[in-house]
Length: 373
Image (cartoon, rainbow, N blue to C red; front, side, top):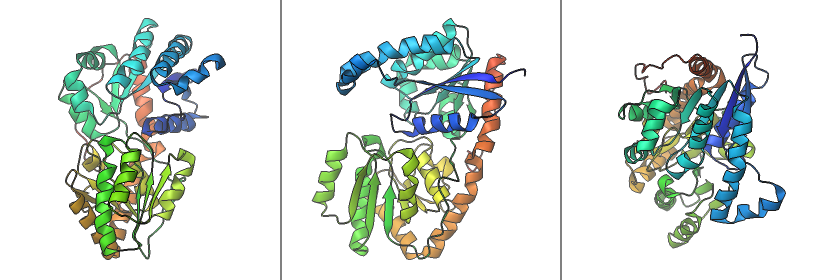
C-alpha cells in the first residue's frame, strides 16, 4: 500500500454521550499515527452555522437544521474517502444518519463498511424491509460488535463479521476490592430499555439488609424524573444521580464503586460491562440480548432473569457477603478484557476495510465462542 487507507468514520461526535460516540472516538484516537489507516470523523450531529445554533434547542427544528448541515458535509467528506465506515443504530436514527451516508457513498462509488450496533435489531429488522435491503445489497460489508448481533443478522439472511467493542485498560485501572463494600454503581442511561427502575427496586432490597449501602446512577435520559420519584417512593437513602458524565471522567466512578449492577431489557454488547471488567468490579446483570455473550454466569459475573429485581438483589447480596467469590469473578472478567483491547480489534478493522475496498464478497464465518465475543 503506497499510502494510508483514507477512512471516513460516520458516527456521532462526543457531543452526544453514548456508546457509539465513545467507540467512534476510540477508533479515531487509535488510528492516530498508524501507517495503515488515516481516519477522519464525519459527525452525524454537525454544529450548524452560528445563526442557526439556537434551533438545536427545539426538538423537531433541531432535526431539520442538523440534516441541512449533515448532507452537505457528507457530500464534501465522503468523496475524499477510500472506505466509508458507517455506525448505525435502529428505527428513526437509521433513516436520519446511516442511510444518507450509504446513499451518498454509493453515489461516489465508495465502499461501505456498515457497523450496526443496535440491541433492538430483532424488532428493527423484522419491521424494516428498507434496513434489510440496505444491509443485504447496498453495503460492501456488515460488521457487528458481538456474536449476538451476528446471529440476529443471520436470521434475516444478512452476513456479517464480528469486530468487538474496545475498552481502554489504561483509563480503567484494575483494583482488587478488599474489603468489598456495598457500594453499587450503574452507568446506563435513563431510558426504558435499560430499566434503571429495576436497579432501584433491587437496591431497596439490598439496603434492607445493608442500611449503609450506596447506589450511584451515572446517566441521563427521558426517565430521569420518574426514577427520582421512584427513589423517593421507595424511601431509599444514599442514592446519587450524577447526571451525564463525559467519557474522560467516568472512570472515577468505577474506581469508587465495589459492585456494578444493570438491568437492561434490551442490549447488545454493553460497553459499561467491559468498563466494569477493566476496573475490577464484579458484575450483576439481566440475562438479555448480547449480555451472556460477554458475561458467562458464574465465571465473569452473575445473571438474573429480565426485570427480576428480587434475583438481582439476591446476586448482589451474594457478592457482598461472599467477597472472595466476588473477587474470583472480577479476576476472570478482567482476564477476558484482552479480547476487547485495541491490538485485537485493529486487525479486525484492517481486514474489514481491505475486504470492502477490494470489493471481496464477505462470508459468514463460524459463530465464535461467547468468551471470544
